[in-house]
Image 1 (cartoon, rainbow, N blue to C red):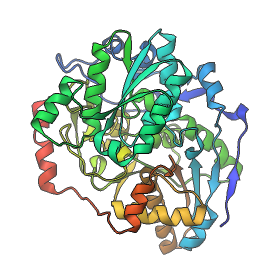
Image 2 (image 1 turned 120 degrees about the vertical axis):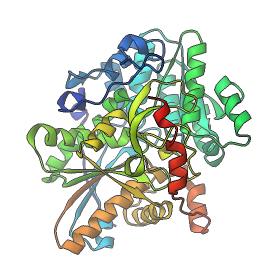
Image 3 (image 1 turned 30 degrees about the vertical axis):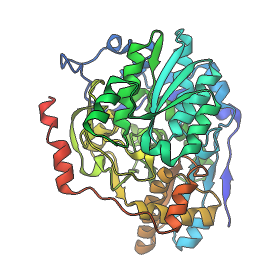
Image 4 (image 1 turned 180 degrees about the horizontal axis):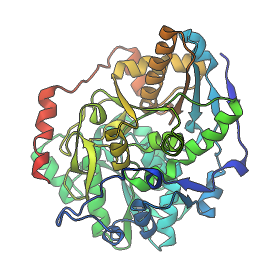
Length: 453
């Protein structure tokens, strides 16, 4: 097992986030007020989000947005994260490709999610907010926001998708350790949850459902704001610290990636690693491929429809222009809980529509095959979500071998899987299966979208 790390110093932590929208020729379509169907203003979002986050969400002009000193100081607890040359994986694949990964699993909560959690908690605290709510799929975002809420003295309620609440009890324990209240969603604590349980008894939940509950609680609780771990523009913005560091580290390695890969749920870690590199394509015409790796069971980018849709199941959120499977989509119970979301963020959706990026779908068993190989060659057990990126990187390495060409591959290891060992137990026991969406299922969830707008 052989690796090589490229390490930066504290002074190399970015001082500003990169706002890709400023460099996009075709801007994302605007989010719409669901009642008036008119484009949202920042003021429309103030009741739900901290004001500065609402302003970041709709900012199309400022390429760089300064990272507050308080946030950057907390980043120093684990950033800069390592860039690693995966010699062991290269050898096992017998490929001429050079494979690098950005290791975001070294954060205090084991994933990239803390990059935005600290920023969102900071802006809420700065505004005088006392309480915040959120949803979480696999628990990575809930764990990160629990840590951030404690760091800034905020009270937090997390609606955790019920199937993950049951599959991943230790993520729930992490949130509770940091002082958060964790509720299995759908729950009886909100009108949205009660309605969903009435209509679908025994329903195991979705991110769309959990978002509905978190938004409802935030709107009904005094001095409370809602926070989100993916999808929205300001979340993508905060995550760009990943790619900005990786740019410097690839320079240290003396290489530039031919392809940048990340797993894809709503788009947070994908945007974080890829947007700074995509900047070179947008502004300099750099020849680089950007690839999102999503589950075959939740294929919004590869099989979804570009359409305005709600970000949640109950229809509380603004209408977002996205590649979507429909906000009523009920995902299969795959272990990559963080990827079980029905839509893609508006920035990514615009980039995909303009063919500035690609997407591939990965079957669950292929992702675990890739995870096991990566663990055995690189010594890190990856999160099931990250394993989709590893599987896509392995596909790229196989193409390089077939073509007899060297190819430089960079992927984001968005988190470790040390709290996901139940999933690995089921994989090694042969109890996991592939879940692929049929055309009939897809048609059913997409059929109602035209009625929205």
